[in-house]
Amino acid sequence: MGTILISVPDISDNELVFDESETRRILKFFWPHLAQSIDDMAIDNEARRLAQTMLLAARVPMRWGISRPLPERLSGPVPA
Image (cartoon, rainbow, N blue to C red; front, side, top):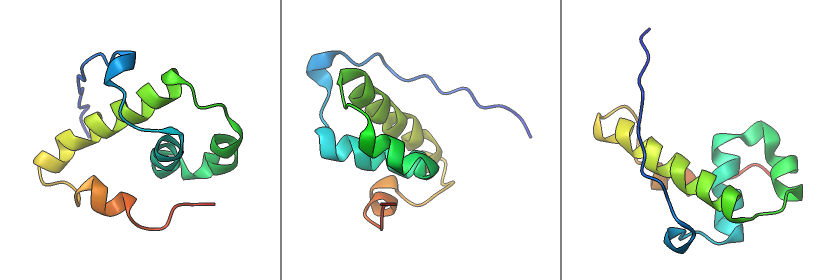
């Protein structure tokens, strides 16, 4: 299997759109095995930036038809 490199734009603090709850939900989607750690961590701008960057990176495969749209997948159950 080959490697795919995805480039995402730098996101400044004023471009962050997700609040603390949304950020936790996004991080749990990508790292469900770390759900407890995500619940316990402080959500600062770096965590918000990581979550937003992950969503931007995940959009590329969707355009290639690899998976269902991520918003549909995020609307399902999230690990506690």
